[in-house]
Length: 312
Image (cartoon, rainbow, N blue to C red; front, side, top):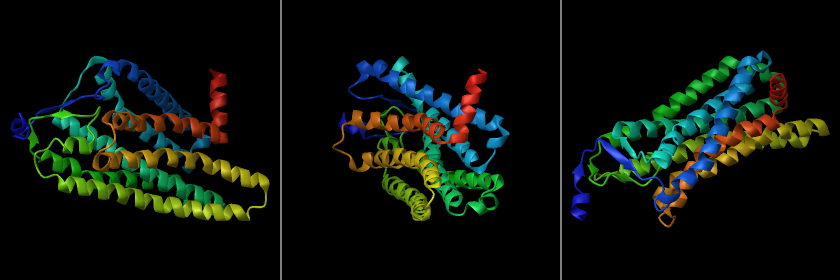
């Protein structure tokens, strides 16, 4: 049996196992995931609707919120429908091409997410530290161009990984211990040499996080320095409120994302079901909380939401 499992095989499909050891409670586990997913979709579509409808919100800050909302919708939708199909209907088979497409989609969106957070940090720096030049430095057109650069960068960075996997020979054992096609989960099914995949994936994670955390760290370092010079208590509080939502989103994004990236390589002692549950939570909790946090912390957006509810 061991030799059979190590025989190179060109698969047309894989089987996603779901959460190993918890198959009997898949339906119960699906309830919070489905709830988080629906709340996230509602919240993010609401932001897109409100910003798109209100001309007064057609500003760089709200364009960035729309980019974040689109990212959140894509991020959760790339993973959760497939996961729920496994939980509810035991539909576990996925073709190789569909698997690689799903992988490309959610990994690219994850890199885009990091780029958007870096851009938002720069936006907050300009708004707080050099507010008189904000309108000339960060125009709507410039924000859209930065968004396009972030998307192109994400595709160029991640595209080599699924292409490398596409050329790999796979073993007869095609059971992926996961609810979706995570890069390393699929790579571990290969009978070939996946050293390049492992090294490139790890380097990519640190390059993306490092290149985006640098402007975030510098921006908030300068913002903190500027806050100490603000004498007005009202202005000081306004600046803190402006930054607190973004800081919360950063804390909700980087630590869980880094954990998911490192767990397959160095987390051999982590129980598979713990890793899989946390990985799925990563894809639904941030999309659920982001619109709530920004809706509460952003006064102008909060007022528009209140007016829309009153009309309904």
